[in-house]
Length: 176
Image (cartoon, rainbow, N blue to C red; front, top):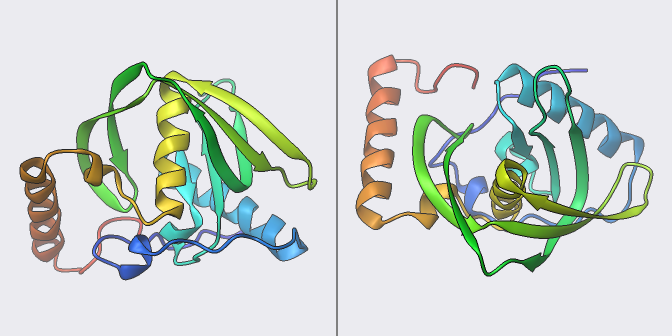
């Protein structure tokens, strides 16, 4: 297992549509394991492959409580159903560290994905899990959580993040 550096904005990989995973190989399974370790270390509750500079449709998520982890490793996830009811949750992103905003999304979604055994699964998500899966699938489509907020708030977050990066002198935030 290995930790993988997480890329940050404005890296262009974060804006690309990720390619589908054609087959589940040992490399893909190891990558998902490494992604989970990287996500936990960050710490975060979700990580998409584009965030580690790999433009493939892979995500890991764990929105369970500390005592009861609930890790999902999803290959080629696709949101197939969205509720009309909306919910607002505060979101952040490992690729825009230390920045958060309230984001409105469908309150309940159904996601179809392939698990590491190659089985097709469907999962109905609500609450934090619904927001997380939508956030991570957005990454696979080159969309960031800041794209769901007003231009003014988005610009403020990007400016603040870029200023913090410049002031840190390292060119990249902690954990990158």
